[in-house]
Image (cartoon, rainbow, N blue to C red; front, side):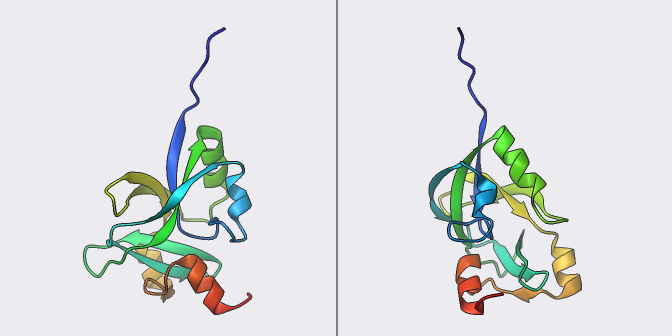
Length: 135
């Protein structure tokens, strides 16, 4: 009997699937690895009036976004991706230690079009949601 290695992918989570947030169950039994922060080259907005986060890369005025690293199988990743809001897409994200993972980004042009609140300096998604009170 041969063993087949299961492909895994490390994913950076910085929104509603964080531990303690309402969509954490979307990660299923994905393995939590550690807390982490991005390099300061991103902005974070509250999209759809607080429904979900919107992160995108910028050339100037970026901040370090706090989040968590998880290890997901291909099936877990596909399930997570299938549950993401419209317009979100997987892309490379660079952590402050230089590790490159996958994260779910949101098109900057849509954030600007709808003028969603910039929460980049609010301590991350979980801190923002805690300060905003119940929705």
